[in-house]
Image (cartoon, rainbow, N blue to C red):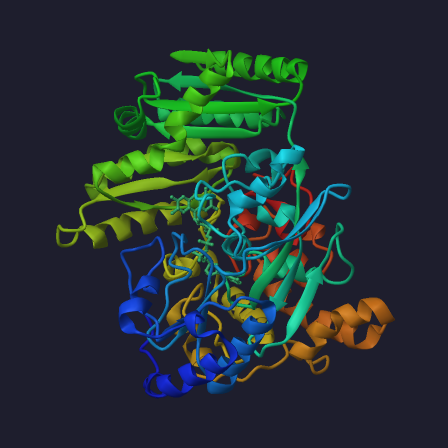
Length: 575
Ligand SMILES: Cc1cc2nc3c(=O)[nH]c(=O)nc-3n(C[C@H](O)[C@H](O)[C@H](O)COP(=O)(O)OP(=O)(O)OC[C@H]3O[C@@H](n4cnc5c(N)ncnc54)[C@H](O)[C@@H]3O)c2cc1C
């Protein structure tokens, strides 16, 4: 994996930069000793490592702004970091960068049960958001498997999903507002404690922007009342393709389970050895869970079992108690840990239209033989979010490269069948060089111009998302910011003035700003936006650029896998 050559001039002034940072932060919040910066050398894509020049842990929005102002003035790249669980290398630093960790920003700022919202600092972990409201019978819906550790900041940056997002949508569908600090230290409020804030859909742009547009310090999230009940059914099949076809039929029938999870034989075997969940000995299994009142659950499960029977399941086990439900979920929840016991693996993340599941699963099996590496599949099947785990041995020379080539072939297949490169893990460094598979140079240029607007100096997480050769000029400061359309000067101030525009009705500036961005997005949506829903985005950027799959190759292109999810421009499709 190539990373840009670190800027020697920046590294040379480390002492000076650290001294300035120490002026605005408590002593313990500035980490510069190489023995300590090692803790920040990678995220969960641990195959690639590089300690940062320094790490800082600000404790307030004002401190984040002060840090960014200094780094902006000094020309120092900044890599925002939540909990470091990114599987795409999104939080991996470069040697000339400062890691800005938000772990100390973990307070609950406000809970409003009447309006079903919670406002938290962005370093708060996902699960502890639910923890703050569960006593009152509420929960925060997006549930990445890493939810015990990952932070809301990282969830917003990656637009994270989880097993139960089939029904409730992903982060973007549960996010109402953010406090964002721009690279120059400007603090901006985007959205708020209500649906669909006025003006352009900046929130849709920020959610999924992989720490490249600003640092999120606070978030307003939607909380939901716990459903009356939930019940899973376990289905075993004698082929992965048949299990895939069953998923496609359930979705086609219009039932909306809260989760449809898929595991194939290698994964079932590993989890049985690890967790002993009592899974059947079969080629593939599905866990389908529905929610509601007992009558609603009976009706939905009745239909789902009827569909499953058409595919000759080798097992159809409906939970009859809390204990049985826990047993059904036990294996799935321990699947990643169980696979880790088998050795090294790389977890991929791509989306496909659900109807393509049987074909894609068959091709992955064939490719496993072609590349000579084992693969296990465990994923959120209901929304076509594939997570093939490629098994390799990091100590065998050439295995990692073979694994990467296999992974790239799978992701290309996802794009080929009408899906996209990432469902929920993001592009980061992992899929950066595959962006050209999904986007042509015009698309990429338009997307990079969105970053130009927010971060003209390309200092925020600059080595991620875009192929290095495509972003080289900008990272080197050789491509000056310019408006896309010759319709006026469209500067970052135009964007920040949007809120003011909402309040004052100052149509001229905001109108021109919108025009510029609209031009950008017309390109980026091209060719890929069909599955997404540009029409849902109220604003140009939200509706087309990001909804069309701009900054993250993810959600918008997934062929409506999450078509039920209401919301902003990016909500058009799946994870
Ligand atoms: C075992 C395991 C299971 C996982 N399961 C899932 C899953 O089910 N669903 C899923 O979606 N993901 C999953 N992930 C991936 C990962 O947990 C998510 O991407 C998560 O949202 C990352 O959160 P984090 O706080 O760890 O972010 P980090 O890894 O610290 O950072 C991720 C990205 O966010 C940016 N960022 C961090 N903080 C900020 C900020 N304050 N402002 C702006 N940008 C910021 C970073 O620069 C980086 O690009 C899993 C990971 C692991 C290890």
